[in-house]
Length: 395
Image (cartoon, rainbow, N blue to C red):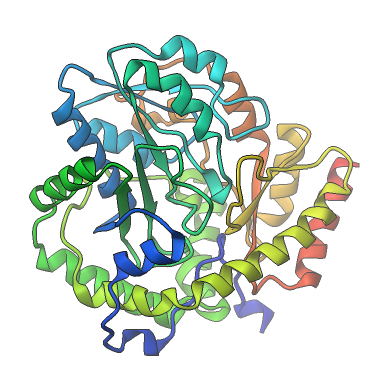
């Protein structure tokens, strides 16, 4: 059976066929209540949510054209900013951290900046409070990118917060997003923008419904072997690292309305999310201790609030150590992989959009970090095998 077993790279919430039954529960209302957030609105993706947010803010402040983002984040963030006709400004990270380098950020803030987008990368909670304090004097908006952090303690400091409901990011409707703002008037403006930008597109919604059916059927260790493992290993054999992790995004971003049917599937599954996240947290704490006992290995943990644990982000002493571990584990079915292959400035296809500049801390982070799935399907024995490979490589 091991030959037909595949761990996912992230711990997504599996769907059950009964989730497809009708429900009177509203997805955005239920998530808002469960997570104690301002009223949410649904979008067709986390990227669409960011486009709605940026478009709304740009209409309110047409003289501001620059958006500051972490140098290491999802390429879709850059594509969304470009889609809105805005300019990207990179900010480095603090050493060995997902937090923005506040010293550099201070030099970048001015009256031309529309927004700063700190990222709760990999479910970890980044320091939004400090970013907000620095941005406030310039009346710069702070957008919390919580695409990978639904269920974390986030949304307390940002002007806008967004989540992704894409496959593998905890709760899912295959592709989807959630968006809100603390300010009532801004929230209404976001809804007005969404109504204008997200039309009814039956072809897109039919495709996403079929994909969600596929997720329901195949998001399990056996199904993932065929739906995910084959393509990933082919890309690795061809040394197509970007394709192997899915970083090769299209400039054309789908924008459409989400059907009540797909929302209902996620609303039904939402009832299982708190227990699922608690299970992942308990498992992560145990496995983090095991990894931290290895000399020279660092696991990225929370310092600014309680996060969620779709996977563990692990820093090896050098890029050579990281690559040596991946040479043994990346092609395995154990759920060891990389997050984003490069910093934003290092992707060839983003070069027309992203200014070329050195971001030493972010580049170092990208070069030394690998991820280990925190899926409940990864057994203790399998995790011990991963830890053993890491220990033998760095010691």
